[in-house]
Amino acid sequence: MTLTSSSAPALKGSRGGDGREKRGPKLPGWIDGQNISLIGALFVVLVLFGVLNDNYLSLSNMQVIAEAATITGLLAIVQTVVIICAGLDISVGSQVGVASVVSAMVFTTTGSGALMGMAVAVAVGLVIGVLNGIVIVYGRVNPTIATLAGLAAYKGLAQLLSDGRAQGYVLNNDVFIFLGRGRIAGLPVMVWILIIVAAAVHLLLKYTDIGRNLYAIGGNDTAARLAGISINKYLICVYALIGVVAAVAGILLTARTGSGQPVSGSEGLELKAITAAALGGAALKGGKGGIGGTLLAVALLGCLENGLTVEGINTFWQNVAQGTLLVVAVVIQQRRSGERAVGLPH
Image (cartoon, rainbow, N blue to C red; front, side, top):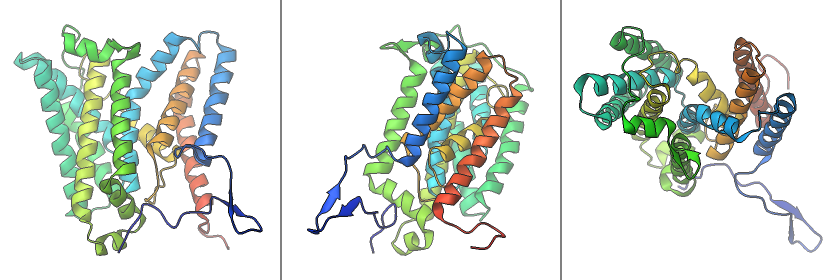
């Protein structure tokens, strides 16, 4: 029995009278209707705020946007992976807070150096991710409920470890300075980390059996199980990946702010990550999604947030915009899927 990441391929063109298929110009695989819409929306946002503020499109402001979007981007990438598996992780923001606090506190209290603090933070992230996976798989708890509990629990853990306030000072260390403020070929180091993670996950999803199995699990878990795919192991590994990447995001948050942040800087990241994944085309019911669309959505959210800030618009409106975009993304998904609206006739 053979499984693929999607249903039967759609026709790529119409057939002429001679029976041969007429093909139009071929676009790159990551460019589809969803991504074209995102590119158009991103262009509108850039033009709008560029007209309103002369400095908005400056190189320095673009770098600010890229750095600010890096942490959201990392979480959105792994959120896309778990959504493809028909799962969800609402606890990613709290995981970032735990890793941020741990990386700073280990560095400042043990005197063992930045790398030790980072290693412990990644190890803690791995444990948290595996724990989430075990609760979901073997506890048979719905992913939304399990990670909603994790959202509260890990937030509380970060506050307990830090006594509810920023911990440590790391900008006296060259490694943290390099991560938070360094440049390679003109691009911030943080952005390079995002690019590397995005490329690795894209290749995993697109060109490996692991990626095809992940799509199969999200598309039809019963068929995937009958095909011999070990769904439990895959899900635990996916949540472990989320924990590790969230820990990396927490380390970058520490490097960017100069101290471990239990809540500030990490709260609300789960909403941004889910919104970016949904806007990028990841179907919340599973089996569909890609990293290209997610990155475009992250760029759109980052540019919109920065533009609102530059124009001095109340930050509360940013939350309104994020919530609205998430609803719009889900509505578009439902319309495209052709499912009957709840409570309404066909």
